[in-house]
Every structure is written in C-alpha cells, then in structure tokens.
Length: 406
Ligand code: PLP
Image (cartoon, rainbow, N blue to C red; front, side):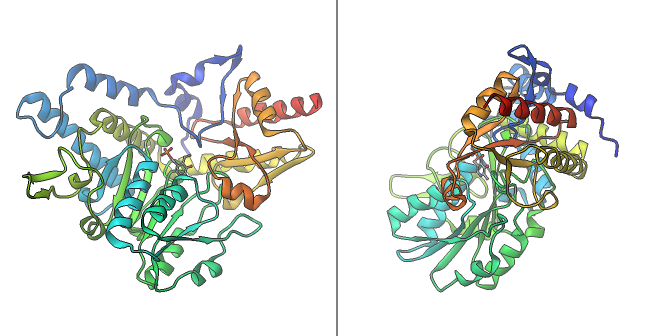
C-alpha cells in the first residue's frame, strides 16, 4: 500500500505544533478533523479572487462562484454515489440534515400516534430532533436495543414494526462504541415494511467508502468538518421521491419559483431545501476535502485506520484496569471509548492534555447509551487518516504515567 504517512502529515500544518511544549497528539477526530492545506487554500483563493453571491448574478464572478458551488455538489454526488445532484442538499452539518428530515418528514408524512424507530446508540442529534416532532405532533419513538457487545439487536428491531411505523433513523457508526451497523440489512428490513430509512453517516464517511445506492437508504446525512472539510457545511442526501414529497424546511430566497401574497410555488430540487445564501465558500472547501480523501483512497484510509485501531486496542489492553467499550477490533471503526480503573474520565482527559494528547471525555452526546452501559462517561480516542502507531504509544505511555499518579 502506497500510504506515505510522513508526507500526508505534512499536508496538515496543525500537526506540526506543540501543546504545553509537547508535540501535539491529536486523537479527537470523532469530534472534528484537522484540515489539509489544500482545503484552506481553496477557500482563501475563492474569497480573494472569486467571491460573489451564487445563482442570482449575471456577472462574471457570480457565474464563476455558481460554477464552483455546483461542481462541489457534483463532487459530493460522486463521493457517495448518489444517482443525481438533485438528491444532494447542502446543510450546516449532520445535525441540521437530521433536523430537516425529522421536521419535514414529520410535518408531511406523520400523524399523531405514528412511530419512528431509532437505536439505543444514537447521538443526541438523532434523538432530540425526533423528540421535538413528538412534542409537536404526538408521534412516538421506538428504540432498537443493543446487546452487551454493543451491536444492534436485529431480531428486536424487526419486532418494532407495526402499522404506525413511518420511518427508521439509525447511525451507520457509533461515535462511542465504534460499532459499524449493518445498515444495508436495516434498510432491507424496513423496506420490507414499506418504511424509509435515514442513515446518520457522521462517523462513517470519514473512514470508509459509502455508496448510498448500494445501501439503498432513503436519506443520508454527514458533516464536512468530520471529513477534513470546513465547519458549517454538511450534506443531506435524499431520494428524489422523498424530497419531492416532503415540504420545505425554511422559507426565503433561492427556495422559491414564484411568490405572491396569495400563493408561493417552490423551486425544484435540491434548491427547495436551500433557503437563503448558501455557504458557497464552504462547499468549495468540502469538495476539496472529498477530492483529497478520494485521492488517498478510502480503502487505503480504512486499511490504515483499521491497523491503528487493532494496534491501539492491543496496546491499551496491556494496561491494568483498562476497560474498552464496544465490539472487537475487527468489527469496529477507528474510535475507542475507555475507562481506566476508577480514574475519572475528566481527570484522564485533563492530564493527558498536559502531555499534548487531545482526547475527548464525557457522554459524547449519547446519554441514553451511557444509561444502557450503566456509566456516566468515558474517555475516547478517535483516529484519523494522519495518526500513527507512535502516537498510540505516546497515548499508552501517558495513561500508564497517569495511573501511577493515582
Ligand atoms: N451523529 C453522530 C454519530 C455524531 O458523532 C455527530 C457528531 O459528533 C453528529 C451526529 C452531529 O454532527 P454535527 O455536530 O457535525 O452536526
């Protein structure tokens, strides 16, 4: 495999900095990833040389900015293998994409007493957005339980369907357990009951190739900043038949065809869901990031991160009192949530930080999962395409050092 990690790391200027005098070891990629120079450069270049509002202008710059923006949509389409750019809606991120579906699908396709199926391992964004619909419309949340290994109980899932089930909304990868869910099977079962599925791809898209046509999901959400792109930009993929059927999310410019005080008609897809000036600079950055990971090869990134994860679990398990949550190394993604003896996760994170090691601590926006696991929180190390085994050694040595202090 031609994966030149030293060269790759040079693309990310921040990785060369120190923290408290120690080289930065950035292991918080599940929260957000660092940006390669090409992403920042492309955005700066557009601000300096192209900037103009998109879609509405007849002048040179506006047309150039519109071209860049729409080319970015095509890059996203290709990246997830959507059928058409009409199915690619730009949002602010996974959270907004899920809220869009919950709100619009809830308004257009659900009535009091109807049900949405989510899972016990969801991020709050895939729970609370449905709870808001529940409060407004009297729908109910049904929950797929997980087993002790941290995997979805598919037999229980199938039992949740009834005539009130209107949609299923599940994550492809757990941001806590690293579990890679069999979303294709989840979709197959739902479609047997004529129920559409939203897949949360926040933690999958940065780590392995996603093909929405192969999964056959009806909606798919992901965030730019978790896949080496800028903050504030994300994607909602939706099959045209569903995007046509559900009402718009927000009203304003761009999303209309004609407006009068009596009647407004809406723009065609995907613009019906893109009210207001889009973040066209961020879409350029997102497209650059997708080009960057595509050039490295998603399969190469996956192989590199799987090797790191396997190595990390092996090394971390040598530490006395180490408890790692989630399935075995071969069945998980590049995220490891752990506890060490009775050291509080916050103490662990704070002391590791002093050694230059950035990890995340707490409930990871998954409180219901914490309840299921019977814990308050964990420490979490999550890897990206630029991490190395040496960094894992530094983490392990750091944990050993902290253990001696307690
Ligand atoms: N879903 C999952 C599984 C996540 O891990 C996250 C963020 O950590 C989100 C949704 C929300 O993503 P964002 O904050 O980018 O909208």
